[in-house]
Length: 218
Length: 218
Image 1 (spheres, each protein chain N blue to C red):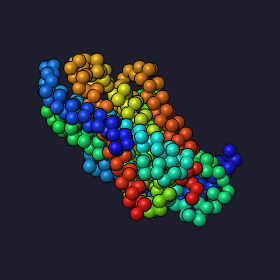
Image 2 (tube, each protein chain N blue to C red; image 1 turned 45 degrees about the vertical axis):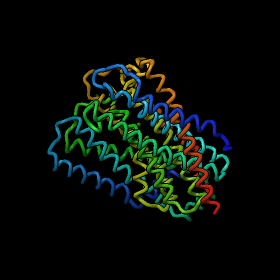
Image 3 (cartoon, one colour; image 1 turned 90 degrees about the horizontal axis):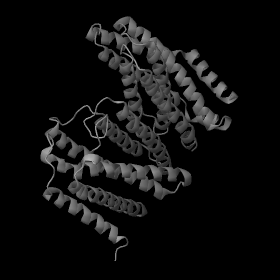
């Protein structure tokens, strides 16, 4: 536990010292949203709003998370290997990326609402689904970035490998957002969507913990 | 005498039988589908073969990670390539069928999305393999990706079609299953066809794996 906490703290300190990732990605998100606003005007159609929002967030996530293992050099990896266990390394990365992703997600939601307006979501379903989605996307992309970083570190591979892994989650999130637009939502529907998201999150984290040790050692 | 000749010949005979009998038997005249229902014998079998191949590759990936034997990696990767072949055949037969019954080569259907995403995942697997040079590293990392992607796809294909409101495929989204309404004549062709194609798929897999091992020995 202490190991994980220290590793998360280290990632945060690195981030705060450089301020490069979060600022760069925020600027990227804001400019994308601005471009969307220029092209579309204010979107009235709710389905287009949902699609655009999740696509923008997905690409922001790719940018934010893909650095997590790629930025670590081989020497530093060896150093961690001698200090910490593989499980705590991957868990700390997932926790850190999930936090980063939630902050990014909330900020880009605010900017998106500012530029494009807000459809009348029922917040009781949209917000939990949004947070679970951020956790799921960041956890699965963390795992993919660990895989991509062991194979010649190229960014193209990250996109190719990550896309099929994230698409199920993305479709589920778009579906859930569409459900949360309805004026009357049945409780069973809320439970069904949220439990599906929660299940995917759990499976991704469990698989990451089981499989990561095989990626970690040489 | 070739070892295991009997199951290979059975497979061939069943496939030949399904192709010939599939064209000759009388099929029930249904609205919209009409005579194209004969495609059931070919199209559905392709997907069965594909999923069996991907399942086989998952089993061999898990076995590779628990024992690190090179022949398990050969089997895992060859079953993926073989499954991709059957997947492409399934897509092609499905697209032709869709053109004649639904009026378009591609429709926005949960089943089709699932097929497309799983094909993408396994094409990404092929790209990942070709991007790593070192043999044992390639085997280990691609096995990890294989397990990770397969689990997500299973959840995806199991969860999303049930959450979706409608599907053009039978047995999903409230439609009745084909198997319930399937004519007895058609069952007599369909089940042998499925078994025959599975046997042929395993035969192809065996040949491919042997070829790979021969090339490696040279």
